[in-house]
Image 1 (tube, one colour):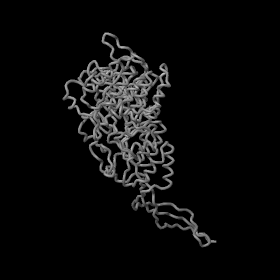
Image 2: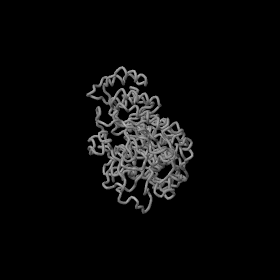
Image 3: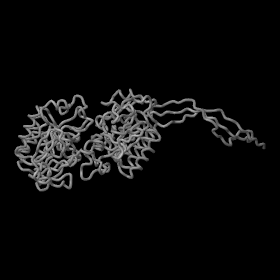
Length: 591
Protein backbone atom coordinates (compact mmCIF):
# COMPACT_ATOMS: atom_id res chain seq x y z
CA UNK A 1 0.00 0.00 0.00
CA UNK A 2 1.34 3.40 -0.94
CA UNK A 3 0.62 6.43 1.31
CA UNK A 4 0.72 9.88 -0.22
CA UNK A 5 0.65 13.14 1.85
CA UNK A 6 -0.78 16.08 -0.05
CA UNK A 7 -1.47 19.76 0.77
CA UNK A 8 -4.21 21.68 -0.98
CA UNK A 9 -6.11 24.97 -0.67
CA UNK A 10 -9.82 24.38 -0.92
CA UNK A 11 -12.02 26.63 -2.98
CA UNK A 12 -13.28 29.57 -0.95
CA UNK A 13 -16.86 29.43 0.32
CA UNK A 14 -19.14 32.10 1.78
CA UNK A 15 -20.25 32.10 5.42
CA UNK A 16 -22.83 34.34 7.15
CA UNK A 17 -21.74 35.68 10.57
CA UNK A 18 -24.46 37.38 12.64
CA UNK A 19 -23.53 40.70 14.23
CA UNK A 20 -25.00 41.90 17.57
CA UNK A 21 -28.75 42.38 17.36
CA UNK A 22 -29.74 46.01 17.17
CA UNK A 23 -32.07 48.45 15.55
CA UNK A 24 -31.29 49.33 11.92
CA UNK A 25 -28.29 51.49 11.09
CA UNK A 26 -28.17 54.34 10.47
CA UNK A 27 -30.71 55.29 13.12
CA UNK A 28 -33.61 57.22 11.62
CA UNK A 29 -35.21 59.76 13.93
CA UNK A 30 -38.16 60.63 11.61
CA UNK A 31 -39.48 57.08 12.04
CA UNK A 32 -39.96 57.75 15.74
CA UNK A 33 -41.50 61.13 15.09
CA UNK A 34 -44.39 59.38 13.32
CA UNK A 35 -45.94 59.16 16.79
CA UNK A 36 -43.90 61.68 18.77
CA UNK A 37 -43.90 62.44 22.45
CA UNK A 38 -44.98 65.99 23.32
CA UNK A 39 -41.35 67.18 23.57
CA UNK A 40 -39.35 65.27 20.91
CA UNK A 41 -36.31 63.61 22.52
CA UNK A 42 -32.94 64.66 21.18
CA UNK A 43 -29.32 64.15 22.19
CA UNK A 44 -27.01 67.01 22.71
CA UNK A 45 -23.61 68.48 22.43
CA UNK A 46 -23.23 70.42 25.68
CA UNK A 47 -21.12 73.12 24.07
CA UNK A 48 -24.16 74.32 22.08
CA UNK A 49 -26.36 74.77 25.13
CA UNK A 50 -27.96 78.24 25.07
CA UNK A 51 -27.46 78.59 28.82
CA UNK A 52 -23.92 77.85 30.04
CA UNK A 53 -25.28 76.81 33.44
CA UNK A 54 -27.98 74.41 32.25
CA UNK A 55 -27.34 71.39 30.03
CA UNK A 56 -29.99 71.26 27.29
CA UNK A 57 -30.79 69.11 24.24
CA UNK A 58 -30.21 71.34 21.22
CA UNK A 59 -29.33 69.00 18.33
CA UNK A 60 -30.04 65.60 16.84
CA UNK A 61 -27.09 63.38 16.11
CA UNK A 62 -26.62 62.69 12.44
CA UNK A 63 -26.54 58.90 12.21
CA UNK A 64 -25.95 57.05 15.48
CA UNK A 65 -26.53 58.30 19.02
CA UNK A 66 -23.62 58.56 21.42
CA UNK A 67 -22.86 55.40 23.44
CA UNK A 68 -24.72 55.18 26.72
CA UNK A 69 -22.96 56.83 29.64
CA UNK A 70 -23.74 56.47 33.35
CA UNK A 71 -23.25 59.27 35.89
CA UNK A 72 -24.50 59.75 39.44
CA UNK A 73 -26.61 62.91 39.74
CA UNK A 74 -27.72 64.81 42.85
CA UNK A 75 -31.00 66.74 42.84
CA UNK A 76 -30.67 70.51 42.40
CA UNK A 77 -34.31 71.17 43.39
CA UNK A 78 -34.85 74.35 45.46
CA UNK A 79 -34.76 73.76 49.21
CA UNK A 80 -33.36 70.26 48.81
CA UNK A 81 -30.05 70.57 50.66
CA UNK A 82 -28.49 69.28 52.80
CA UNK A 83 -30.28 65.92 52.28
CA UNK A 84 -31.06 65.31 48.62
CA UNK A 85 -31.99 62.33 46.45
CA UNK A 86 -29.48 60.97 43.95
CA UNK A 87 -29.89 58.76 40.91
CA UNK A 88 -27.94 57.19 38.04
CA UNK A 89 -28.50 58.97 34.74
CA UNK A 90 -28.25 56.54 31.79
CA UNK A 91 -28.40 58.27 28.41
CA UNK A 92 -27.41 57.13 24.92
CA UNK A 93 -27.30 54.00 22.77
CA UNK A 94 -26.86 50.53 24.28
CA UNK A 95 -23.67 48.92 22.98
CA UNK A 96 -21.70 45.77 23.75
CA UNK A 97 -19.55 47.63 26.30
CA UNK A 98 -22.51 49.21 28.12
CA UNK A 99 -23.09 46.47 30.78
CA UNK A 100 -19.47 46.77 31.91
CA UNK A 101 -19.91 50.54 32.31
CA UNK A 102 -22.88 50.24 34.65
CA UNK A 103 -21.07 47.63 36.74
CA UNK A 104 -18.17 50.05 37.23
CA UNK A 105 -20.55 52.77 38.42
CA UNK A 106 -22.35 50.41 40.81
CA UNK A 107 -19.02 49.33 42.27
CA UNK A 108 -18.23 52.92 43.24
CA UNK A 109 -21.51 53.19 45.19
CA UNK A 110 -20.53 50.63 47.78
CA UNK A 111 -23.91 48.87 47.76
CA UNK A 112 -26.12 52.00 47.76
CA UNK A 113 -29.23 51.34 45.69
CA UNK A 114 -29.79 54.36 43.47
CA UNK A 115 -32.62 54.38 40.91
CA UNK A 116 -31.75 54.53 37.22
CA UNK A 117 -33.23 57.25 35.00
CA UNK A 118 -32.88 56.06 31.40
CA UNK A 119 -33.18 57.94 28.10
CA UNK A 120 -32.19 55.75 25.14
CA UNK A 121 -33.15 54.98 21.51
CA UNK A 122 -32.11 51.34 22.00
CA UNK A 123 -29.19 49.37 20.62
CA UNK A 124 -27.81 45.89 21.21
CA UNK A 125 -30.36 43.34 22.36
CA UNK A 126 -27.72 41.14 23.97
CA UNK A 127 -26.33 44.07 25.97
CA UNK A 128 -29.83 45.23 26.95
CA UNK A 129 -30.58 41.80 28.43
CA UNK A 130 -27.32 41.85 30.40
CA UNK A 131 -28.17 45.34 31.66
CA UNK A 132 -31.63 44.19 32.75
CA UNK A 133 -30.19 41.27 34.69
CA UNK A 134 -27.59 43.50 36.35
CA UNK A 135 -30.29 45.98 37.39
CA UNK A 136 -32.47 43.22 38.83
CA UNK A 137 -29.55 41.56 40.61
CA UNK A 138 -28.79 44.85 42.37
CA UNK A 139 -32.51 45.44 43.14
CA UNK A 140 -32.63 48.85 41.44
CA UNK A 141 -35.70 50.85 40.40
CA UNK A 142 -35.84 52.40 36.95
CA UNK A 143 -37.80 55.19 35.26
CA UNK A 144 -37.83 56.66 31.77
CA UNK A 145 -36.61 60.22 32.11
CA UNK A 146 -34.12 62.81 30.94
CA UNK A 147 -31.71 64.55 33.31
CA UNK A 148 -31.14 68.28 32.88
CA UNK A 149 -27.83 69.17 34.43
CA UNK A 150 -27.10 72.35 36.34
CA UNK A 151 -23.49 73.55 36.49
CA UNK A 152 -21.19 70.82 35.19
CA UNK A 153 -22.44 68.24 32.71
CA UNK A 154 -20.90 64.91 31.57
CA UNK A 155 -18.09 65.43 29.11
CA UNK A 156 -17.48 69.05 30.08
CA UNK A 157 -13.76 69.69 30.52
CA UNK A 158 -12.21 71.46 33.50
CA UNK A 159 -15.54 72.31 35.14
CA UNK A 160 -15.09 73.46 38.75
CA UNK A 161 -18.63 74.75 39.38
CA UNK A 162 -19.58 71.87 41.70
CA UNK A 163 -16.32 71.72 43.64
CA UNK A 164 -16.91 71.42 47.38
CA UNK A 165 -20.63 70.68 47.03
CA UNK A 166 -20.35 66.96 47.64
CA UNK A 167 -21.28 65.77 44.14
CA UNK A 168 -19.85 65.93 40.63
CA UNK A 169 -23.20 66.46 38.90
CA UNK A 170 -26.44 68.19 39.89
CA UNK A 171 -29.69 68.28 37.98
CA UNK A 172 -33.40 67.55 37.74
CA UNK A 173 -34.99 64.46 36.15
CA UNK A 174 -38.17 64.83 34.10
CA UNK A 175 -40.11 62.53 31.79
CA UNK A 176 -40.88 65.23 29.20
CA UNK A 177 -39.17 64.31 25.92
CA UNK A 178 -37.50 61.16 27.29
CA UNK A 179 -37.58 57.86 25.39
CA UNK A 180 -36.91 54.17 25.86
CA UNK A 181 -37.17 52.52 22.45
CA UNK A 182 -36.26 49.35 20.59
CA UNK A 183 -33.93 47.27 22.81
CA UNK A 184 -34.18 49.73 25.73
CA UNK A 185 -37.44 48.19 27.09
CA UNK A 186 -35.47 44.96 27.66
CA UNK A 187 -33.11 46.89 29.92
CA UNK A 188 -36.10 48.65 31.49
CA UNK A 189 -37.71 45.29 32.32
CA UNK A 190 -34.94 44.61 34.84
CA UNK A 191 -36.08 47.30 37.27
CA UNK A 192 -37.79 46.33 40.53
CA UNK A 193 -40.09 49.33 40.20
CA UNK A 194 -40.58 50.42 36.59
CA UNK A 195 -42.09 53.85 35.87
CA UNK A 196 -43.01 55.61 32.62
CA UNK A 197 -44.60 59.05 32.90
CA UNK A 198 -47.29 60.26 30.52
CA UNK A 199 -44.78 62.54 28.77
CA UNK A 200 -42.17 59.83 28.23
CA UNK A 201 -42.11 57.57 25.16
CA UNK A 202 -41.59 53.81 25.32
CA UNK A 203 -41.69 52.02 21.98
CA UNK A 204 -40.81 48.64 20.48
CA UNK A 205 -40.51 47.03 17.07
CA UNK A 206 -39.34 43.88 15.33
CA UNK A 207 -35.69 43.09 16.01
CA UNK A 208 -33.19 43.52 13.18
CA UNK A 209 -30.28 41.11 12.86
CA UNK A 210 -27.34 42.30 10.76
CA UNK A 211 -25.21 39.59 9.13
CA UNK A 212 -21.66 40.19 7.89
CA UNK A 213 -20.91 38.06 4.85
CA UNK A 214 -17.36 36.68 4.65
CA UNK A 215 -15.42 34.62 2.15
CA UNK A 216 -13.40 31.95 4.03
CA UNK A 217 -10.23 30.30 2.67
CA UNK A 218 -9.16 26.90 4.04
CA UNK A 219 -5.87 24.95 4.06
CA UNK A 220 -6.71 21.26 3.97
CA UNK A 221 -4.33 18.36 4.62
CA UNK A 222 -5.30 14.92 3.39
CA UNK A 223 -3.82 11.56 2.48
CA UNK A 224 -4.56 8.95 -0.16
CA UNK A 225 -5.66 5.59 1.15
CA UNK A 226 -6.48 2.89 -1.38
CA UNK A 227 -6.83 5.53 -4.04
CA UNK A 228 -9.25 7.70 -2.03
CA UNK A 229 -8.70 11.08 -0.33
CA UNK A 230 -8.99 11.13 3.44
CA UNK A 231 -8.92 14.57 5.14
CA UNK A 232 -6.40 14.84 7.95
CA UNK A 233 -7.00 18.50 8.96
CA UNK A 234 -8.65 21.68 7.68
CA UNK A 235 -7.87 25.23 8.89
CA UNK A 236 -9.20 28.68 7.98
CA UNK A 237 -6.24 30.66 6.63
CA UNK A 238 -7.97 33.88 5.51
CA UNK A 239 -11.25 35.82 5.75
CA UNK A 240 -12.46 38.47 3.30
CA UNK A 241 -15.55 40.64 3.95
CA UNK A 242 -17.89 40.59 0.98
CA UNK A 243 -20.77 42.72 2.34
CA UNK A 244 -23.65 42.59 4.82
CA UNK A 245 -27.36 41.96 4.81
CA UNK A 246 -30.15 42.18 7.39
CA UNK A 247 -33.18 40.16 8.44
CA UNK A 248 -36.18 41.81 10.03
CA UNK A 249 -37.85 38.87 11.77
CA UNK A 250 -36.62 37.27 14.93
CA UNK A 251 -35.83 33.58 14.75
CA UNK A 252 -37.72 31.06 16.83
CA UNK A 253 -34.62 30.52 18.96
CA UNK A 254 -34.43 34.25 19.70
CA UNK A 255 -38.16 34.35 20.47
CA UNK A 256 -37.68 31.61 23.04
CA UNK A 257 -34.75 33.49 24.63
CA UNK A 258 -36.65 36.77 24.86
CA UNK A 259 -39.77 35.05 26.16
CA UNK A 260 -37.75 33.31 28.88
CA UNK A 261 -36.04 36.59 29.84
CA UNK A 262 -39.32 38.50 30.12
CA UNK A 263 -40.80 35.72 32.28
CA UNK A 264 -37.68 35.87 34.44
CA UNK A 265 -38.31 39.62 34.95
CA UNK A 266 -42.02 39.12 35.68
CA UNK A 267 -43.14 40.81 32.44
CA UNK A 268 -46.02 39.47 30.35
CA UNK A 269 -45.80 38.00 26.85
CA UNK A 270 -47.73 40.96 25.45
CA UNK A 271 -44.51 42.95 25.04
CA UNK A 272 -43.03 40.29 22.76
CA UNK A 273 -46.27 40.12 20.77
CA UNK A 274 -46.16 43.86 20.07
CA UNK A 275 -42.49 43.63 19.08
CA UNK A 276 -43.21 40.88 16.54
CA UNK A 277 -46.24 42.72 15.14
CA UNK A 278 -44.41 46.02 14.51
CA UNK A 279 -42.19 46.35 11.39
CA UNK A 280 -38.51 47.01 12.02
CA UNK A 281 -38.82 50.28 10.09
CA UNK A 282 -41.44 51.60 12.53
CA UNK A 283 -41.83 52.18 16.27
CA UNK A 284 -44.97 51.18 18.18
CA UNK A 285 -45.55 53.26 21.28
CA UNK A 286 -46.98 51.26 24.18
CA UNK A 287 -49.43 53.37 26.17
CA UNK A 288 -49.24 53.36 29.95
CA UNK A 289 -52.42 51.36 30.51
CA UNK A 290 -51.15 48.61 28.18
CA UNK A 291 -47.79 48.62 29.97
CA UNK A 292 -49.64 48.04 33.24
CA UNK A 293 -51.61 45.17 31.69
CA UNK A 294 -48.41 43.64 30.31
CA UNK A 295 -46.71 44.17 33.71
CA UNK A 296 -43.95 46.09 31.95
CA UNK A 297 -44.66 49.10 34.18
CA UNK A 298 -45.32 48.60 37.88
CA UNK A 299 -47.17 51.87 38.53
CA UNK A 300 -48.60 55.01 36.99
CA UNK A 301 -46.24 57.41 38.77
CA UNK A 302 -43.64 59.51 36.99
CA UNK A 303 -39.88 59.72 37.49
CA UNK A 304 -40.62 62.16 40.34
CA UNK A 305 -41.47 59.17 42.55
CA UNK A 306 -37.77 58.23 42.47
CA UNK A 307 -36.07 61.65 42.27
CA UNK A 308 -38.31 64.22 43.97
CA UNK A 309 -36.69 66.27 46.74
CA UNK A 310 -39.66 65.43 48.99
CA UNK A 311 -38.37 61.83 49.28
CA UNK A 312 -35.72 62.98 51.73
CA UNK A 313 -38.02 65.06 53.92
CA UNK A 314 -39.39 62.15 55.94
CA UNK A 315 -37.95 60.51 59.03
CA UNK A 316 -36.87 57.37 57.19
CA UNK A 317 -35.64 58.49 53.76
CA UNK A 318 -34.85 55.90 51.05
CA UNK A 319 -31.26 54.79 50.24
CA UNK A 320 -31.12 57.25 47.35
CA UNK A 321 -31.01 60.17 49.82
CA UNK A 322 -27.58 61.35 50.94
CA UNK A 323 -26.90 64.13 53.41
CA UNK A 324 -24.00 66.47 52.75
CA UNK A 325 -23.36 68.41 55.99
CA UNK A 326 -23.03 72.15 55.54
CA UNK A 327 -24.24 71.98 51.93
CA UNK A 328 -26.88 74.69 52.32
CA UNK A 329 -26.57 77.87 50.29
CA UNK A 330 -25.99 81.02 52.37
CA UNK A 331 -29.10 83.08 52.91
CA UNK A 332 -31.50 80.33 51.80
CA UNK A 333 -33.56 78.57 54.43
CA UNK A 334 -34.30 74.90 53.99
CA UNK A 335 -38.08 74.25 53.82
CA UNK A 336 -39.32 72.72 57.03
CA UNK A 337 -41.43 69.62 57.31
CA UNK A 338 -44.01 70.87 59.80
CA UNK A 339 -46.34 68.52 61.60
CA UNK A 340 -49.92 69.52 62.25
CA UNK A 341 -49.07 69.83 65.94
CA UNK A 342 -46.37 72.43 65.19
CA UNK A 343 -48.30 74.56 62.72
CA UNK A 344 -49.50 78.05 63.53
CA UNK A 345 -48.02 78.25 67.05
CA UNK A 346 -48.41 81.81 68.39
CA UNK A 347 -45.09 83.73 68.45
CA UNK A 348 -45.23 84.02 72.24
CA UNK A 349 -45.08 80.26 72.63
CA UNK A 350 -42.02 78.14 71.87
CA UNK A 351 -42.41 75.81 68.90
CA UNK A 352 -42.93 72.18 69.77
CA UNK A 353 -40.40 69.59 68.68
CA UNK A 354 -41.18 67.74 65.42
CA UNK A 355 -43.13 64.52 65.74
CA UNK A 356 -41.04 61.37 65.75
CA UNK A 357 -42.98 59.90 62.84
CA UNK A 358 -44.03 61.58 59.56
CA UNK A 359 -47.57 60.36 60.18
CA UNK A 360 -49.22 60.75 63.56
CA UNK A 361 -52.94 60.57 64.10
CA UNK A 362 -54.45 63.67 65.68
CA UNK A 363 -57.92 63.44 67.22
CA UNK A 364 -60.35 66.21 68.00
CA UNK A 365 -58.62 69.56 68.43
CA UNK A 366 -55.04 68.19 68.65
CA UNK A 367 -54.26 69.94 65.33
CA UNK A 368 -54.95 73.59 64.42
CA UNK A 369 -58.12 74.40 62.53
CA UNK A 370 -58.07 73.97 58.78
CA UNK A 371 -56.66 76.86 56.78
CA UNK A 372 -56.77 77.31 53.01
CA UNK A 373 -53.86 78.68 50.96
CA UNK A 374 -53.49 79.05 47.19
CA UNK A 375 -50.09 77.62 46.19
CA UNK A 376 -48.11 77.77 42.96
CA UNK A 377 -45.76 74.92 41.96
CA UNK A 378 -42.13 75.73 42.74
CA UNK A 379 -40.48 73.40 40.19
CA UNK A 380 -38.23 75.61 38.02
CA UNK A 381 -38.93 73.41 34.97
CA UNK A 382 -42.61 74.38 34.92
CA UNK A 383 -41.96 78.06 34.15
CA UNK A 384 -43.55 80.03 32.70
CA UNK A 385 -46.75 78.00 33.08
CA UNK A 386 -47.03 76.30 36.49
CA UNK A 387 -49.85 74.45 38.28
CA UNK A 388 -51.69 75.97 41.24
CA UNK A 389 -53.79 74.35 43.92
CA UNK A 390 -55.58 74.98 47.22
CA UNK A 391 -53.73 73.63 50.23
CA UNK A 392 -56.21 72.56 52.94
CA UNK A 393 -54.51 71.48 56.18
CA UNK A 394 -55.79 71.12 59.73
CA UNK A 395 -58.87 70.12 61.68
CA UNK A 396 -62.35 70.65 60.23
CA UNK A 397 -64.15 73.06 62.58
CA UNK A 398 -67.36 75.09 62.56
CA UNK A 399 -66.05 77.85 60.27
CA UNK A 400 -64.24 75.62 57.74
CA UNK A 401 -66.97 75.45 55.10
CA UNK A 402 -67.52 79.22 55.25
CA UNK A 403 -63.79 79.89 54.84
CA UNK A 404 -63.67 77.56 51.85
CA UNK A 405 -66.60 79.33 50.17
CA UNK A 406 -64.94 82.70 50.81
CA UNK A 407 -61.71 81.54 49.19
CA UNK A 408 -63.47 80.06 46.16
CA UNK A 409 -65.34 83.34 45.64
CA UNK A 410 -62.03 85.20 45.88
CA UNK A 411 -60.30 83.27 43.07
CA UNK A 412 -63.05 84.13 40.60
CA UNK A 413 -64.45 80.74 39.67
CA UNK A 414 -61.15 79.08 38.74
CA UNK A 415 -61.32 75.35 39.44
CA UNK A 416 -58.18 74.71 41.45
CA UNK A 417 -57.69 71.20 42.84
CA UNK A 418 -57.76 70.82 46.62
CA UNK A 419 -54.87 69.09 48.40
CA UNK A 420 -56.10 67.91 51.81
CA UNK A 421 -54.14 66.85 54.89
CA UNK A 422 -56.43 66.56 57.91
CA UNK A 423 -57.07 64.47 61.04
CA UNK A 424 -60.81 65.02 60.63
CA UNK A 425 -63.10 67.07 62.84
CA UNK A 426 -66.73 68.23 62.64
CA UNK A 427 -68.75 65.76 60.54
CA UNK A 428 -71.60 68.18 59.86
CA UNK A 429 -69.17 70.81 58.51
CA UNK A 430 -67.33 68.18 56.48
CA UNK A 431 -70.63 67.29 54.78
CA UNK A 432 -71.17 70.96 53.89
CA UNK A 433 -67.59 71.37 52.64
CA UNK A 434 -67.85 68.19 50.53
CA UNK A 435 -71.06 69.43 48.88
CA UNK A 436 -69.38 72.78 48.16
CA UNK A 437 -66.43 70.98 46.56
CA UNK A 438 -68.79 68.98 44.34
CA UNK A 439 -70.84 72.09 43.52
CA UNK A 440 -67.69 73.87 42.24
CA UNK A 441 -66.45 70.80 40.35
CA UNK A 442 -63.13 70.55 42.21
CA UNK A 443 -60.72 67.62 42.18
CA UNK A 444 -59.25 66.41 45.48
CA UNK A 445 -56.09 64.56 46.54
CA UNK A 446 -54.79 63.54 49.95
CA UNK A 447 -51.34 65.10 50.33
CA UNK A 448 -49.49 67.82 52.16
CA UNK A 449 -47.90 71.00 50.82
CA UNK A 450 -44.31 71.95 51.55
CA UNK A 451 -43.79 75.70 51.10
CA UNK A 452 -40.71 77.19 49.45
CA UNK A 453 -39.87 80.93 49.63
CA UNK A 454 -43.37 82.08 50.59
CA UNK A 455 -44.65 84.98 52.73
CA UNK A 456 -43.25 85.52 56.20
CA UNK A 457 -45.51 83.87 58.74
CA UNK A 458 -46.79 81.21 56.36
CA UNK A 459 -46.74 77.72 57.81
CA UNK A 460 -43.41 75.98 57.28
CA UNK A 461 -41.79 78.85 55.38
CA UNK A 462 -39.30 81.59 56.25
CA UNK A 463 -38.99 83.44 52.93
CA UNK A 464 -40.50 86.86 52.33
CA UNK A 465 -40.75 87.36 48.58
CA UNK A 466 -44.53 87.84 48.57
CA UNK A 467 -45.37 84.68 46.59
CA UNK A 468 -46.51 81.38 48.12
CA UNK A 469 -44.70 78.65 46.24
CA UNK A 470 -44.37 75.01 47.14
CA UNK A 471 -44.74 71.41 46.11
CA UNK A 472 -47.27 68.75 47.05
CA UNK A 473 -46.34 65.27 48.22
CA UNK A 474 -48.30 62.38 49.67
CA UNK A 475 -45.50 61.13 51.98
CA UNK A 476 -46.71 61.49 55.58
CA UNK A 477 -50.11 62.96 54.63
CA UNK A 478 -53.29 61.73 56.36
CA UNK A 479 -57.01 61.88 55.91
CA UNK A 480 -58.86 60.65 58.97
CA UNK A 481 -62.51 60.37 60.00
CA UNK A 482 -64.53 63.40 58.81
CA UNK A 483 -61.81 64.23 56.26
CA UNK A 484 -62.97 61.18 54.28
CA UNK A 485 -66.42 62.76 53.99
CA UNK A 486 -64.88 65.96 52.63
CA UNK A 487 -62.74 64.06 50.10
CA UNK A 488 -65.83 62.22 48.86
CA UNK A 489 -67.06 65.50 47.39
CA UNK A 490 -64.25 65.70 44.83
CA UNK A 491 -64.98 65.24 41.15
CA UNK A 492 -61.76 63.26 40.82
CA UNK A 493 -60.34 61.78 44.02
CA UNK A 494 -56.76 60.53 44.45
CA UNK A 495 -54.89 58.96 47.36
CA UNK A 496 -51.18 58.30 46.78
CA UNK A 497 -49.28 55.21 47.88
CA UNK A 498 -47.59 57.04 50.76
CA UNK A 499 -50.68 58.79 52.16
CA UNK A 500 -52.70 57.39 55.07
CA UNK A 501 -56.49 57.12 54.76
CA UNK A 502 -58.29 56.15 57.98
CA UNK A 503 -61.96 55.78 58.90
CA UNK A 504 -64.05 55.06 61.98
CA UNK A 505 -67.65 55.27 63.08
CA UNK A 506 -68.55 58.97 63.43
CA UNK A 507 -72.24 58.99 64.29
CA UNK A 508 -74.83 60.80 62.12
CA UNK A 509 -75.09 57.50 60.23
CA UNK A 510 -78.18 58.36 58.21
CA UNK A 511 -76.88 61.75 57.08
CA UNK A 512 -73.51 60.28 56.09
CA UNK A 513 -75.13 57.40 54.21
CA UNK A 514 -77.42 59.74 52.24
CA UNK A 515 -74.44 62.00 51.47
CA UNK A 516 -72.31 59.12 50.17
CA UNK A 517 -75.17 57.97 47.94
CA UNK A 518 -75.45 61.54 46.67
CA UNK A 519 -71.72 61.51 45.82
CA UNK A 520 -72.05 58.09 44.09
CA UNK A 521 -69.72 56.39 46.58
CA UNK A 522 -70.27 52.63 46.92
CA UNK A 523 -72.02 51.24 49.98
CA UNK A 524 -68.89 49.28 50.90
CA UNK A 525 -67.21 52.49 52.04
CA UNK A 526 -70.04 53.27 54.48
CA UNK A 527 -69.85 49.70 55.82
CA UNK A 528 -66.09 50.04 56.33
CA UNK A 529 -66.62 53.26 58.27
CA UNK A 530 -69.27 51.74 60.49
CA UNK A 531 -67.27 48.59 61.16
CA UNK A 532 -64.35 50.55 62.68
CA UNK A 533 -64.67 51.71 66.27
CA UNK A 534 -63.82 55.30 67.12
CA UNK A 535 -60.95 54.26 69.37
CA UNK A 536 -59.52 51.94 66.70
CA UNK A 537 -59.23 53.77 63.43
CA UNK A 538 -59.05 51.50 60.41
CA UNK A 539 -56.61 52.34 57.62
CA UNK A 540 -57.89 51.53 54.13
CA UNK A 541 -55.59 50.36 51.35
CA UNK A 542 -55.55 51.92 47.89
CA UNK A 543 -57.20 48.79 46.49
CA UNK A 544 -60.02 49.06 49.03
CA UNK A 545 -60.51 52.75 48.25
CA UNK A 546 -60.83 51.99 44.54
CA UNK A 547 -63.11 49.02 45.21
CA UNK A 548 -65.41 51.17 47.35
CA UNK A 549 -65.45 53.95 44.72
CA UNK A 550 -63.93 56.54 47.04
CA UNK A 551 -60.96 57.09 44.69
CA UNK A 552 -61.47 57.53 40.96
CA UNK A 553 -58.05 56.30 39.81
CA UNK A 554 -54.67 54.97 40.95
CA UNK A 555 -52.83 58.27 40.44
CA UNK A 556 -51.15 60.26 43.17
CA UNK A 557 -51.28 64.00 43.83
CA UNK A 558 -48.93 64.49 40.84
CA UNK A 559 -51.94 64.03 38.57
CA UNK A 560 -53.22 67.39 39.87
CA UNK A 561 -50.04 69.30 40.77
CA UNK A 562 -47.21 67.73 38.73
CA UNK A 563 -45.17 69.89 36.37
CA UNK A 564 -46.19 67.86 33.30
CA UNK A 565 -49.89 68.68 33.52
CA UNK A 566 -49.31 72.21 32.21
CA UNK A 567 -47.68 70.85 29.05
CA UNK A 568 -50.89 69.19 27.89
CA UNK A 569 -53.33 70.67 25.42
CA UNK A 570 -55.75 71.99 26.43
CA UNK A 571 -54.22 73.00 29.74
CA UNK A 572 -56.21 72.37 32.93
CA UNK A 573 -57.77 75.30 34.79
CA UNK A 574 -55.09 75.31 37.48
CA UNK A 575 -52.28 76.29 35.05
CA UNK A 576 -51.39 79.88 34.35
CA UNK A 577 -48.23 81.93 33.73
CA UNK A 578 -46.72 84.36 36.28
CA UNK A 579 -48.04 87.42 34.41
CA UNK A 580 -51.59 86.41 35.24
CA UNK A 581 -50.67 86.26 38.92
CA UNK A 582 -48.80 89.57 38.87
CA UNK A 583 -51.87 91.28 37.45
CA UNK A 584 -53.83 90.55 40.60
CA UNK A 585 -53.53 92.71 43.68
CA UNK A 586 -51.35 91.25 46.39
CA UNK A 587 -50.26 87.68 47.05
CA UNK A 588 -52.55 84.65 46.67
CA UNK A 589 -55.20 84.56 49.37
CA UNK A 590 -54.87 82.72 52.66
CA UNK A 591 -58.03 82.00 54.58
